[in-house]
Image (tube, rainbow, N blue to C red; front, side):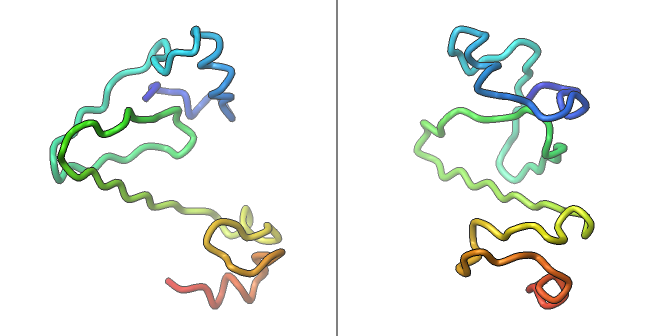
Amino acid sequence: MIPGSHKLGRADIRAMVEANGGSGRLPGAVPLVCEAGDVTMVNRQMVHGSFANSSPDVWISLTFGFHRRKSVLGQKAALSIAETNAVYDEQRIFTAPR
């Protein structure tokens, strides 16, 4: 992760990698070393990543996010929404599974 990168606005990670010769090792990045069962929390805007799990051990990552209602209202749904062109209106937000 690159400490403080969440304060710099939207990052163009592809451009950052290209500017560093195509390497995924970016200047200022530090490792976030974890043991089994550890929990980490980072701002979703922080530049972060991981290398492939090359061990025989299972590696599970759970991601939780929070969005303010005003940032979601009127936005088109994506990813797990089966309906095409679904929009997050007041009714969808009110009845969404919690």
